[in-house]
Each structure stands twice: as structure tokens, then as C-alpha cells.
Length: 636
Image (cartoon, rainbow, N blue to C red; front, side):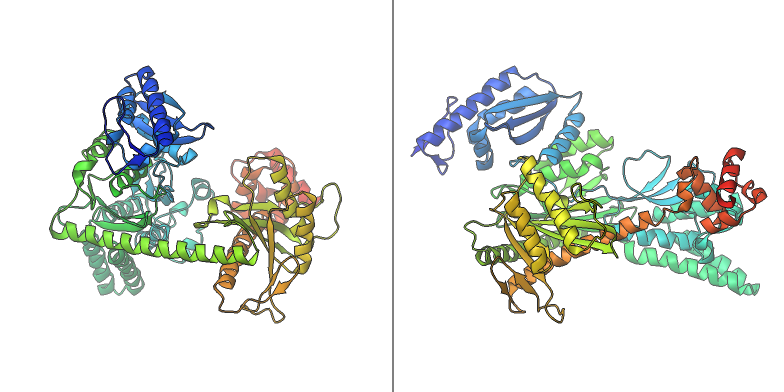
């Protein structure tokens, strides 16, 4: 055993001791990096380190590629995690960018795409929704919006919770009676829609409100979203009192309901942080090598929600580097506020601060409050992060225990890495589909879920009837056949199917036929009275009943129920799409846009069928040739 001393006389901390073989490999990785650094330009860009098989180990960004990469040759300044990375590095590649911001964005995109093991990877980083008041239309539309800000208008957000933005939208519609329909629907209305009847729209599509009055409502909505509610409440209260004095009680009641909707928004969103109307708060806790970052988001003095994030990283990663990488990735596709509060020393985040300043073109300050109300908010976020990671670790431990029991039940030599669960759904054989859900060592893995549309021919053989046996055979044959055709696909260790002995035998034959005997198979079926807790577990040579309080039974039930939920959701979506098909779709020359125009005008296919030629001609922008085709189709 020796201490590591490299050619630059950099001495690694005495606690970090390697054997001679590891030392030689480490120094070799260091030499590869030093050689590469000499060839790099002194320009901003992204670099990546790769192992002997070409797998990406780490992706990083740099303002100066040559200087940044050279830092990895000074081993004493590296954490144990980065030393292990250097140990495995066998080659490097890089991309030059025009600016540091471009390097940041490219780095974040590459990390999300490749998920290198030595990077901190932010999960659950979907774009957050905004409320958009679209100014491109004569009568501005209010809507929920995700994605890049490509439309002209006012954006309010981001809202962390989709349910929060939905409830806020409903309250805004009730308070200000603003349209939410698309421009195509708006331009083709001949009478008000249901939203007008339930007092959520003022029906500008049929001129039930003047343009001046509608724009006043739009301005009031903007004031509310900017946090200026008192003037609006005062204005509506005044109108309500006048209406009541003039015995216009219905109008007064409507105004009262609008004031209630405004109060509802205030009740759930209003918050006061001194001198801070636009601010994000992040706190990180690290327990047993797992971390949780809890975020709280405030805009215009309103609470736009909070959320816990669980970044992927190696066990010996430090809180500081996790939070730093998190902030880079989190704000890569979002605008940052002027102030960000954290629970770690702010001096470590000067580079993040500088990068966000350039990206957002505003002055961004990252602060660790020491006292007062701001500190209380950060401590509350830290407590939420602590509870979040405790719960996450408990769930992981429970999941691991259940996998261990499943391994024992199936007499496996090693812990299963991947469990696939299959189910199917249909309506009397129609709109049939199968689904696959996946669980790994950490829990469910939704990104690996798959749907299979059931085909009406089974590998060149026409079938007259689709039943559960046929669907299970069709789905499993396609899934398992793909494993034999593509060696890069991840093989399941265990397959669980929702079914009885019949389904089990069908799938078993497929596994044997395709020579995938390493895959373990299990089926779960309801008991005689189809009661939960009485399930029968079907194995190769036996059927067993687990005790109704057995944690393993709960685990298998949860997987089965998740597959069932996913199957039902997917089936409903497919059924709703197919239900739009009608005899009207068989008419050549009438595409989706023209069909939509006719449906908006007449309301149903039956009304179109019964319409006279003169009534059909009332539809705007349809040429006479199409109108004649439609009439002849239904009246021939």
C-alpha cells in the first residue's frame, strides 16, 4: 500500500491510500487527461471523459477548456469521487461553443441525454406550466402553457404544481370571465358555449361583451397576477353595492361570486416576505448517500408552489457540489428570479451566480440568510428536504426488502435489477392494448413503461376473436422477441403477469421457445371470490397463497395495480381517439380542418346529415365543391 504522489508533487490526503496497481491506473488516467488538455483550445465548451468501452463517465462545461481540464491532473484538489473518475478515464472528447452560456446549455442537455455516472443528474425536471395571456388575438386568450415563450403575451409563473395552475385558471375565469378557447373555435362560434352558461366566460365570440369591457377585464386579471388585488376588490365591491341599491340582485350576486374567486386565489397563494416579491428558495439534505433538494417558489408576492427533487449521484458526493449542479440544470430551461436563497455558504456559488446573470440578463444574487424571516423560510425548506429524503430512503429500503423476498421466492442467486409487469385492457375485444411497467432497485421506472397496440393478426395468422389469452401471447411474444433481435436492450430478470395458470403457461412457452430461460416468471390471479388479499401466486410447479399481511404480497399487488392503472389510462385515451371516427371520416376530400369547421357549426354528425344544401352553404370558408360533396354523400 502506498500514498499517491504524482509528477507535480501533488500529495493526496494521507487517508486516501491505494494499492500499487490502482496507483498505476490512476496515474495513467492522469496522463491521458494531461495529454488531452495540451491539445484543447482556450475557448468555452463542453468536455466528456470516457472509459475503455467508450461509455461516458462525466460531462463538464468550461469557460476555458484547456485550463479547466488541466485541473483534473492535480489529484490533491479532487474529491474521492473525481479521483475514481480519473482512474477509469481512457479517452476524452470535447465541443467548442461560442459562449459560456452555450456551454452550460449544451452540458445540461448532454447530461440529461447520456446520464453519466459521475455527474449529478436532475430527475423530474419537466418544464413547469405558466399562465399565458395571449396578446396575438383581438380578444386575448387566457391559458395554461408549457415550453419556450414563443407567443406574444404576458407569462405568469412558473407554477410548480399543475393542479395549482389549473385551480388558479378556473378562479381567474370565474373572476374575470375571460375566454380560454382556441382561435379556431372562437372564430366559428354562432352561439355561446357551456362556459358562458356556467359563468366562466363573457362570450366575446358572439359579441355579448364589448371590446372595451373585455380589455378592462384583461387588465384586472393582469393586476391580480401581479399581486395588486386590493384595487380590484374595491372596484368590484363598489359595483356590487351599486347593483344592489338599484335592485339588480342577479348582477350583484354575480359580482359577489367574482369577489369570492379573487379571495380564493389570495387565500392559497398570498405570502409576504419582506423586500422579496420574486424569489426561489432551495435547501438540500443528504442522508446515507441520498439527497433531497426542496424548492419553494414565489412570484409577485404569490406562492407558486413547492416541490422536492431527488438528484441521482454517487454516494460520496458532497452537498455543495450536488446543489451547484442542481442549480445549473434546473435553470438551464427556466428564467431565474433576482434572488435565490439556499442553506449552504453562498461563497461556493459565485460561478453559478455569474452564469445566471449572463443567461437571464438580470442581476441574480444567491444568498444564505443568517437571521430573520428569510432564514425561517430556508429552515422550513430544509425541514421539508429532511422529511423528503427520510421518506425516500424508507421507501427504497422497503422496496429492497420486498425484492429480496421475491428473489428468495423465485430461488434466484442474485438480486433482480429489473422487474417487468404486464397487463392488458379492452372493451369487449375492441380498442385492445397491452402495457408493460418496469420496476428497478429504486422503485418504479415510468420512463421505461411501454404500450402495445394489439394486432388483429398473430404473426401471419388471422384471428377471429381477441381474448385475454391471445392478448397476453401477442404482447409477450413481441416484447421477448425484441430481446433476441437487439442485444442492446435490457433484459428483465423477472416477469410478472396479471392472470392465472393459463396465461402463465402461454408465456412460459414463449420464454422456452426464444431460449430466454434466465428470466423468472410469476403470475398473480384473484382468488375464488376475487377478494383482494386472497390472490394466488402461480409459479412453475406450484400455486401458493401468501398471507394477506405478507409484505411480499403487498409488493406484488402494488406492481399489479400500477400495471392495471396504466392499462386503463392508456385504453381510455385510445378509446376516446377512436370514438371520434365516424362515417363522416370516410368522405374523401374532407380533412380534419374542414370536418372541424362543420362540427363547430352544426354540433354533431347527425345535424350535418340532416342539413339542407342552403344550410351547408352557411359554413364559412368552405368551397362549393366540398359542400356539394358533403350533401351528396349523406343524401345519395
